[in-house]
Image 1 (cartoon, rainbow, N blue to C red):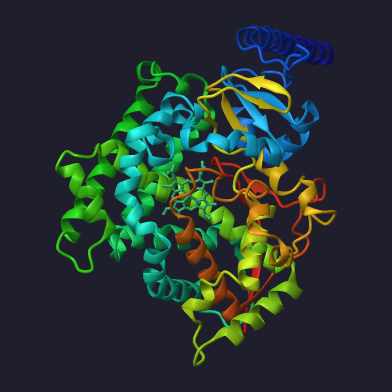
Image 2: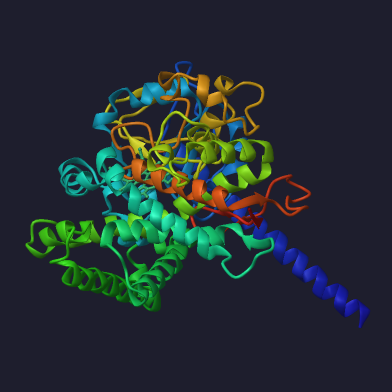
Length: 496
Ligand code: HEM
């Protein structure tokens, strides 16, 4: 009996060793082949360095799901290094000088096709505004632009404030004592439905439920993108028929939802954004897939981005009780006739604004920005980078491991923004992108999330139950089931 167990154990160990050997050899061979196929050298003829290629998706998964750790680990390969999205090379830049050099012709840049994410990703987001180029991009951006200017957002500020106040009141309307909530789960629906209201106008309970369910289905489909492998190629339609069906049914239902909302809002006043953007689709002057995927980008892809940003904004204030108290005092003193003022929520010169920027700095929603390319060759970190190569900015290096931010860079110290010049921020701070393709929703996102925090602090003190941080890493755990891992942290809310 005993010797049988030992034999099984030995066979399993040998099998595991063999697998590791085969997989590693395969990875090494692919790595060698890809290096020969895409030589990038400096003036002395030295090949660019980078982490070894990983079977079967290169570094695509690590880049998103473990970005913070990988940013630190991969910096060992130099200030400019190379990673792979499956077989596609991506050059990572980590310094403000290289970001400046790369963006010197940013008006001519192109986003990499489907963010180098492969076929399945292309079906979900490959034609959204953020990933198309040239005249198509100009046309789609032109259709949405008018609703997201600073002026347009300021006009909507009272409605954003009303929604934020109601949402905050509902968080723990039943209880009078302190309650413990899961930060991401409790906060995520606010930016989602606030953005939905901005696009569609007020939604009924049934419409909200339907939209949320569509978002969850979209999230489930995004997991195939993260799985990579066969889902990177169109042939997955042949081999994964169940998944292909799920994708088709989702796309049909998503189109039907927007058509239904359009029909019910056609004559409403004030006019809803969905009416002005769905009309050209019906008239055949805009591609349905581009408009649908852009709304998908704003609502579904952004669900993770906005909830990540909001969760960290609140968590950092909960951790830094002294800053939180000063901010609450600022909120109190800014009130007009006892009511939170829109002017204060949107002011650019306040502790609130500095806290907002500091939380964006310390917790960028992605450690590696969306890949894009210049039509001209570039010298970056001494390497001769060919035209049209995919370049990725390591946002963690820019926002944190950057001499501009000083010795206390890891600390939450919002006051640093009160003294820094905007020109210094240009290439030393990543939040809404660097060049011509900056986030369309930046004014809206800033207004919505700052307004929410003002109402939250007006009603509650926020703290963190201890111990909350992981004993090994010294940081909070992450939930890694989407392309933007959100913090897995709890908050204690105590009514004031
Ligand atoms: C705090 C929340 C948000 C952050 C941190 C953020 C960040 C970004 C970033 C980094 C980009 C890419 C810029 C580039 O590649 O240069 C982007 C693009 C974009 N964002 Fe946002 N975003 C946020 C919220 C929103 C919201 C609420 C909306 C819409 C309602 C939105 C709509 C878009 C669109 C449409 C693009 C593509 C722009 C283009 O390529 O022309 N974003 N965002």
